[in-house]
Image (cartoon, rainbow, N blue to C red):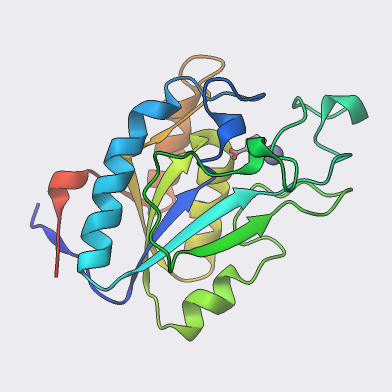
Length: 196
Ligand code: VGL
Ligand code: ZN
C-alpha cells in the first residue's frame, strides 16, 4: 500500500484516554497503557503535518444512567472534574488540542464523540475530510465514533496499533474491527502514514 501523507484536512481523534480506563481506574481497559507511546507518535506526526488534534473524554455526571448504581452496565467512571476523568499524564497532548466532552447528560448514554457535541461542526468548519481514530475502548466509544464519522461523510481510518478494547468475551475487539472494516473504515498502522 502507498503511504498516506497526513495533511491539514486530517484530524487525529484520540478517544477517552482517561485515568478511569487505565489500570488503577474504576473501569480499566486491559493493556490500555501499552498504546500511549503509539498515540504519542501519531500526535507528533499530525502536529508536524499541521493536522488537527482532538481528544474526546467521557464526562459523566455523578448519577449517570450507565452506572451500575442506577442499573446500568458499568461501574461509576469518568465523573466530571475528578481524577478518573483526567487524561493520562503520559499522553502528550499539544496545548491546542480540541477537547470534546461527551455523555454529560444524566439520563442518556453516548458512546460516540459526535453525540450531542460540537465535534462535527468543529471538523466541518475547519474543512476536515479524514479522521484517524485512536484510543479506548475499541468495541464502545472508538467503534461508535468511527461509525458516526462514516455516516457524517468523513473518510475514516482506524489506527490499529493505537486502539485497545475490553475484549470481553474474547474476540469482541476483533469483531468490532471487522464490523468497522465492513462499513468502509480502513485499518492502518504507524508505518502506513508519513508527515506532510
Ligand atoms: C466507554 C464504556 C463506558 C468507552 C465509555 O470509552 O469506550 N466504555 N463508557
Ligand atoms: Zn462511560
